Length: 607
Image 1 (tube, one colour):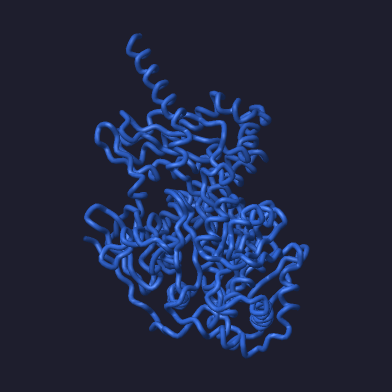
Image 2 (spheres, rainbow, N blue to C red):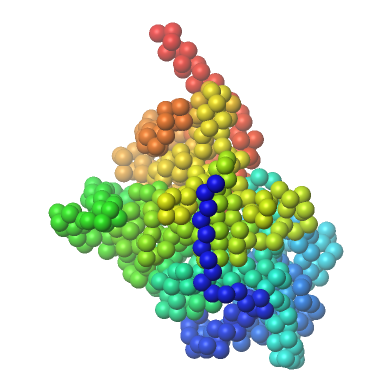
C-alpha cells in the first residue's frame, strides 16, 4: 500500500473559528485592501477594517431578526462581494451559511433548505426568489427570505442598529474548531445531494497551513479574481484563505465581461477548472486563425511547449531559447496582457488538465498548479507547489494531510481538511470511512516523490465484454480539449468495444467553421452531419487513442445535437458530467451507436 504524508506546518489551535481569521486580519492590517468592488471600469477598494465593520453591521441585523447561534441560513446567489459579506456576517452572529447553487431547480432548493434545517434564506435576484417562493409552503422552519436586489443588506444593517457590539463579539467567539462552519451539498453526480458537514477547524487549519505551503500565491501582495461559484467548496476555501493571508479579492460572475475585468483588476493568480483553460486556448487559436495568424499561433504554441518541457528537464538549448523569445514577443506577451499582465499562477482542480496545455500556459508565463480535493475534504487534499510543480500530477499532500493508495487503487485520505461526516446520513458515513481514512472514490497512484496522480472515478471504471478495464477520463479529457467539442462521455460497459457520445461547442463552432471556409451559421444538427466536423472529432479521438492500448481506444462515436448542461441536469455546477444521468437519458443513442457500428462491420465483411 502506497502512502504519502505531509506534517502540519503550524500547530492546531482548537479555540479558533473562521470569524477569528477576519478579526486577526483586521487587527493586524486594518488598512490592507481585502476586496475590490466593480464600479464601472474601476474597482473600489475595501480595507480589512471596512470589511469587518460591514460584517458586524450585517451580523447585528441577523441577530435583530432572531437568528440564533447554530442557525442555518440558505444563500442563493452568484459570485459577488455580498456573498462573502453574508458568509462572515453569519459566522459573526454565531450562525452559518448553507450554499445553494444559483442554477438549482426548485426541488433541489427545497431539499437543501429542508435537509439542512435552514431558518432563513438570502437570495440575489427576483428569479431566485421565485424558485424559493415556489417551495416555501413546504419549508416550515424558514421564517425569513432576504432579497439582495431589494436592498436586503441595507435593511439588515438598519434593523440591527440597536444591537450591542458586545453581543456580536460574544457570539463571534462561541464556535470552536470542532463546531460546524457550513453544510455544503454535493453536486449529486450519483444521486441525491448529500450534506457535507465542514467544521471551523477544517477551514481554519487548512487555511493556516496552505498559506505557509504556498506563500508565493497566498500573501498580502497577491490578488485574485473569483469567477467560479462560491457555492462550491473550491472557491469558498480560497475566499477564507484570502482573508487569512490578506489576498485582495475581486468577483466577476458574468463571463462575458471576464476579459475586461481581468485587464482592470490585474490578478496575480486565478482559480479555474480545466474547461476554462481549454476554452481560453481554443478561443485564442481561433481568433488568430480568423486574423490570418493561425499558423503563427500554432507554431508559437509548439515552441512554447518544447521550451517548457526542456526547462522541466533541466536544460533549454540555445536555438530553442531564441525561438521562444520570438514566440513570446509575437504571441505570449499578448496572452499575458489579456489576463491582466500580472498573473503568474493559476490553481486548477476538479479534473485533469492535459500535459500539453499545462506546458503551454507555463510558456506564456502562467504556471498552473494542479490540485485535487473534494467537498468532503474542504477542497484541497494536494496541490503542486510553486517552487517545484510537477506536470502530470496533482502535487503532494498539503501539510496536515496523509494520502494512501489501497490495494485496488482507491485514493484514501485523512487530515485537517477531512470532514466529520454527512448530515443525517449514517449509512453514507459508514461507507465513507475505512478505519479513519476517507474513501475518495477516485483511482490513483503516488510517484517516487509522493506526488499524487488521479486516473478516474472508481465507480466509473468501464469493464468491456472482453474484460478490459477502462478509465473514461483518460480518453474524455484530451477529446474535450478539441475546439469543436463541448462534452464527451465514453461508454462501453459490457460492450464489445469502447465508444463515445460527443456534443459540439456551440460557442466555438461558428468561428471554427468560418476558419475552415464553411458556413458559420450551420445549425448543430447540420454540423453533426458535416463530413468536416466529423473528421475533426475523429482527429480528436485518434489523438486520445494514442494514450491507451487498442483495446481501450474509442472505435466509434455519435455526435449529439443537444449539449450536456446544468439546465438539463446533465452537468454539475462545476461542469462535471452526471454520468449516470446521461447514460440513462441517452440509452437510445448508445444502442443506436452500437447497432450502426455493427452494421458497418457486417457490410465491410460482405464486400
